[in-house]
Image (cartoon, rainbow, N blue to C red; front, side):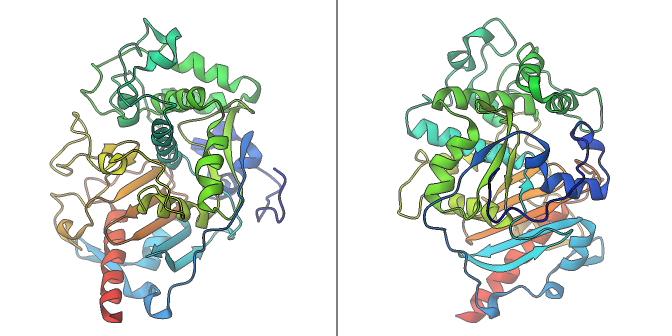
Length: 415
């Protein structure tokens, strides 16, 4: 990627991409911010007027030690939370102004950080734009409408809606700790740069179906890859190029990004792949918070798209006593404080309903709360791709709610 100035820092020695799921702490920091150098990619040029992100008045800035949550009698401050979460970058934007910005691990405002599955939420947004433009008919279109060669396979009868809601019924193992899982095989495909796209096709196209479409929620990066492949065929360009043309340039992102390519100039990966700066992650959050509109007011998404995204799937596995509203829709997560959680503060009833979460392994997060005009971004290097919380409420939801409550309090005091 040609750049001036180039993202900093640029590390000399890069970790082995084939061992990404096994990287240690330092390797994960270096690998995350150098993914665009470690893998082929499609440039996402910026351009035009930069969308301003001014500092909020001092009275609205977050006092780190003044924000905390309590669980099982233990009070956790924001600095303690950052340490426990291995936070490498954090950004909080309230009503379009920065109230907190933090970098660790050598990262800087120009570092490009790899999104992992946060990229799925970008892809789903681009699918919505393609529907608005008439390049994709609707989410009720069959997968085989765009990929006729899948007729007679497990994908026959699956709709785009099933791909975007993760209820295709396809038999796929997403276990990040299992070196023989389908996801691990997809990561291994990435290590063979010359044949990555063909390798992914050969893995995903022949998959069998385990359930009828729409019945069971099952997180499937293979289906997300297929959705990205269909998007590219419909719009006639790689994901990164479409993102640049529709959002990156028109909205006013500050820095160019890179999208991980599976076939340079032709195919990017739909399951993950964005590399961008912390503030540009935040600007995307503002784009969603504002209803998918450009600064000039142009609406890019179909009517009710984001409302539908926050109407969570009721498929088996999405709804539970902890999450009675469901946990997933349109490649966004509902990671609210579990409804049946006890011995916590703030409580589940304080969580801002309707918030959308873009989530990637090892702790990559964008949270958008449209009601309170709050965007939260977190870069992390968790020691596990998907840590176990032993049935306890998700710490992130507690901290996000605590931050939201504190900013509401500050806004009220300023009036």
